[in-house]
Image 1 (tube, helix red, strand yellow):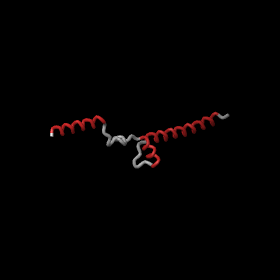
Image 2 (cartoon, rainbow, N blue to C red):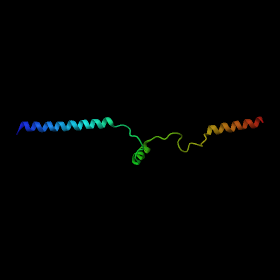
Image 3 (spheres, one colour):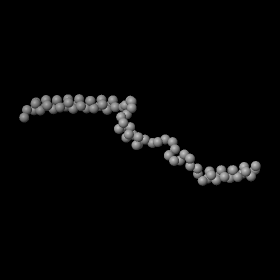
Image 4 (cartoon, one colour):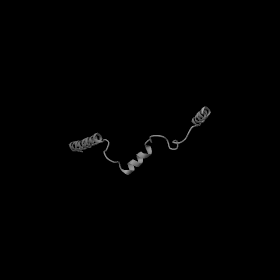
Length: 82
């Protein structure tokens, strides 16, 4: 067993590991939001998780019972006055 040979191999391996660490750090720093249109598979994945804005479907033309009652009362008053 040659100790100097083992040390040389370990030093080379350490240099390779340090280079790998530096390249991974550069990749991690450089990651940001990409510009442009996302791929179709990514937009399909995001469409399922995004919230829709506005009224829920089906609630547009529904009238509540309390508002119908006030309409009938106010219509009766105008007829009585006229």
